[in-house]
Image (spheres, rainbow, N blue to C red):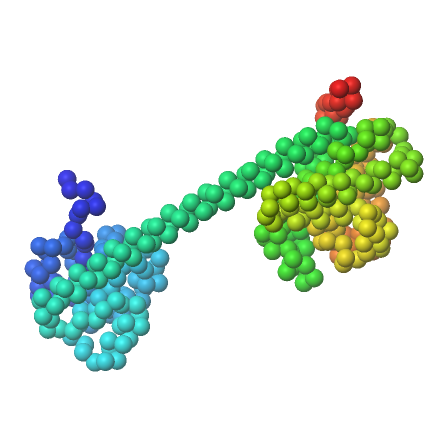
Length: 381
């Protein structure tokens, strides 16, 4: 059996006149694989199933005229790339113009000159072959780009996971805190994406970048001394000042990484914003820069809501967890002072989803115990 690559090109002839179908078959059969259809409806069906390399199409047919057939072929992604040549007795300029406007590659009027007709068919098949090659190459390149993009994203995700996992070994919070806050940020961002104030800043790609960056919000804690970071009780004012440096330590570490890479990385922009500014407050009373209102990056405002809520509902060595209702009441008191009012309103708009995230990813007694053992082991080392 002949390999598909070496087979003759296929041509579909659509005409309601049997004598015309016979003539075309006789002219073409020695060079091409020929299929015939005795009407427009049959022609459309064969075009989809047989996928010919070229279609020769009559215009005047009783069931469906050639113009309509061509229009439907070009509207269907499965047949849009098949070149159509009108082969007709309609010789008016307007007829030809209309046919070409519909997407036909040529317009041949009857009676035909066999040598010229065959040459024009061959030329269009040659062009079709070149077009198919370019389209296949483009499809291959697009697939390669998608593959490389997925690989890059995977590397980013793994890198963030490794870095945050290392940071967790020195923090009292469990890894589930990181996952919960990441999902809170996603829920808040998606809710706000339809808000006129935020829509431009929360396109899907921006949301993805913010969510990817969220786990790095407390990465700077790795630079805080253990005597402060792991202290089981309330920090002194002096100790709290040291603790506050985790924002700038995290920011500076990410900036240094970006400088080492020598390129601007989209998700690192949000990582820098979140690490540095997630402790800022809407009224300007936060740290480290005392930013106020819109001066606080949106990504950091989202993280502020996510981080505070999760701190309230979570058990720590120095406190018991709050029930959701009590935590929500405290959050509400921070509207316009601690939190951007619209961001906090979004929190309550998706409150049921936030609560579900907290319940699904809640810390178990085993998580708490495992974390305590890890911290003790780290302290001894």
